[in-house]
Image 1 (cartoon, rainbow over the protein chains, first blue to last red):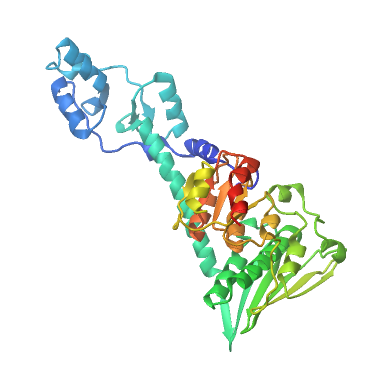
Image 2: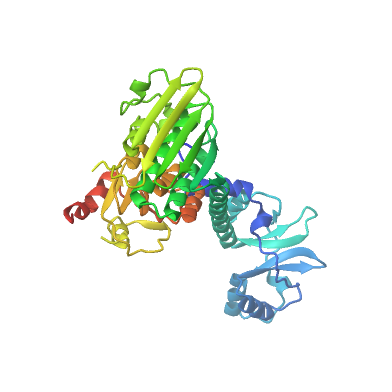
Length: 314
Length: 112
């Protein structure tokens, strides 16, 4: 996953033309003709299959290519009833199926052809490739990547923080790994939806989610790893975020808005504004932080379901 | 102002389709820092940001933002699109800069 200078759509496509092969984009259902086929018959085939050209095979070997342009010329010059063999293009540029798509893009730019016959390692025709095929393949691949991310996210949300119920209380526990930005926000999303399912006021659920999210990212950014535990009781949610170190030297300073020790890398991702702990404090009805350098930090947050505390800056 | 009008005012391209384009938008949070967005405490609002990171989507989910607009014509990664789809958060990109985007949405402030 790209973290910084995030890849835009173009550079993803750019990367894809190197990783995808010609065989991934080519059409495999081929319409072919022989040198003996008449241009009139080819005209019919092109119309029937809505294609603009077709390879010419003789004894399974590629001997030429005939295109819509050849047909137009034949109609113009009155040789439409003649056979393909005489009028086809004989010097055919082919491309190997195991080449990266990047190579095909290069070929299309260099030769200005509408289509490239694709051959296997033995030189036998196995497909045909147009520029439209490349575009379609790239779009499908981009969609697939998004769908894959959506599926992974849904799975993460479903699996994270297996809940245990004891009486009216529900406990959820999430382990949070150092540097694991991919999973930042999973615990808060789960906790938020658990609260909403219980009919907890949306603003209260949001405050719990914000506090959890800031706590999660703190562990990811600053610690060597830890966990977030949430206990949902009838009247409140208690969030405990604990890590194994290195601990905070000066807790009072860390609570000051704007103070941050986050790296440039982390700041470039939009974190490290020095608002994490102040935000958590603002969302909490009760807030406690204990930290011992070398041992770790423990954060305790309680939010009452009937509380009127606002997370608002307005 | 309905979400579809917000998108129209920003000349935005829709990347993840909204389920309810007529949802009422009353405010916007414009920031490149996630903690600033987390601290806004707004309701019925959209996020305007120049930050391109999957965490923008998770942040939007946490604060209950109704849509995300990436400014300066920035394009999200496919991963971001997938995340936005998973959370049902409409995602747009506008060619406008953050400041111009805010100016075009000034009626949101006047409507209050």
